[in-house]
Image 1 (cartoon, rainbow, N blue to C red):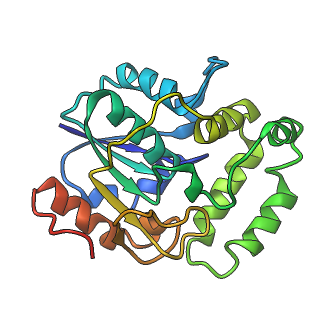
Image 2 (cartoon, rainbow, N blue to C red):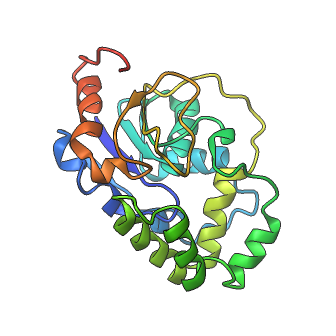
Length: 226
């Protein structure tokens, strides 16, 4: 059994750096920039991306996927194919949890390619609008800077994986949901979830609290949602 950490939009291994030492077992930490580098599938969506993801990392149903944000969305669709255990941290099983609601992003893709978004100005606006007084402001700004200099096609493909529809209806559920009610990016799940302090980056700012139910689940001792 491996524990595979799948990061969110524009994230690298740093987002898991505080939590992964607390969780025992063989671990694999992924990087979303590397995950999407060189991806040429014009029909990319989360379902076909998940299908390609499985053989790329030789994932079996013995593995445990811990996905943050977009990473949980990918893990959820991996579970559709191989029914491995999936843990969501600040993630979703339905796009209606995204703030603001996602719609047609074609103009956004154009703006990303032209560097009209994810630049110094939009980072400044977001840092004051969403994260000015938040304890996770430093890691938010770190990822905002990665977006400023990142490959626009990788950014566009990540957004397509988040927003594009798929042709199946998933009825399965993650094995564990962990979420903060103060998350400014994703609304809390409609289903029961384990409440933790912090915000979208609670796994970075409050790793002990986020790790606790994960360890309990892995040990078969999870007692239910708080």
